[in-house]
Length: 460
Image (cartoon, rainbow, N blue to C red):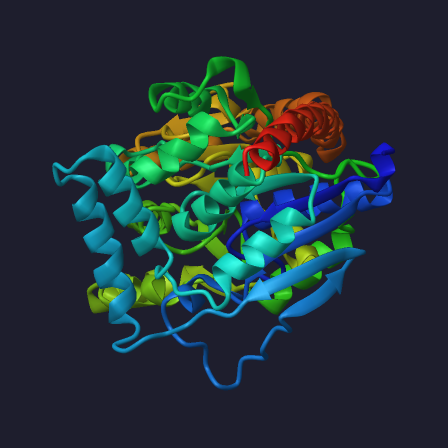
């Protein structure tokens, strides 16, 4: 069988139009596989944003088709169920699963209970039958994002049972023990330990996986990337577009950019408070945020004392989910990118900021510590430390030459080390190697089954 006839199944909890690192990774790899003649299927859900996993989408939200084709990739979506009393049922089951993890039970029983419970967080229509059918029709299965352990472990277990080569990319959030504990349930560990290959985005994640019992020889550190494109960024932004962007949103300088879900763990709350701190220091700074879940940040600003809250509101722009060009224009319009997050396995937006020549301030947590070199291409500050984040931003704003130097160092790092083409070349070679190994194992298994069948027939 030629390499071009290979059939690859990606399994992940959400796909485009959902915005996130897992989706960017899967789409970048799937597009390149299709271009090389590989048949690619994506098994995912109907979620278009994070809330869709536990809360029925608004009636005005356009429903995604259960079968689709995007960029030559076949997409199969499982419908999400919302049993009464949604959305509370999701939270109750989620907490119950984590509590069960700490109960002293025989390991086999605990793993079985957690595995079964995970299938209802959230409930997915025709999960097992669809997984079994697609796995049987594939030469290799790649499961991504262990956050949603039901889909991750169901597909992983099906691939192992069907003797299909299994690649697992768990995307572990190692920035907090309380959060990384969500990735340590026995049925998740079973996939890390039994997969033919486990992909870690950073050395930090690799060390974490080793601690979970994953085989060192099967762990591959494979960073994310960006499209090189033409010039310094894959979306070229003209100066006139920058000026138009600033006028449209009434933005001044210096401008701090934030890209990601506007949540506490992502660092959005800390960033808003740090900007408020800078304004209290009479530092004229602006903040623009793009990404989902911005209502809570709006509530945080509204909760501040009247005078301070109004001043901060005048300086903060919450732009919501935007298209790629708007995101790139924001970065091109900014002075610095802030990503004070503890839930980033890697942080693609760091690479995108460096493509635009921006320095970055990130949290000293998770995979970010492997990407940001303090004083060279950005700064690291403790997660949740408002004064430290304010001080880091102030340092870069006070020394534009140093900031430009760090941005340029980041740009050069991206050009050398972080392209999707590099990531794909490594992944494709791994896929081909595992596929050949899997074919050999299947031939041996079939050959061994023959004498067993003959003996059974002989003895009736």
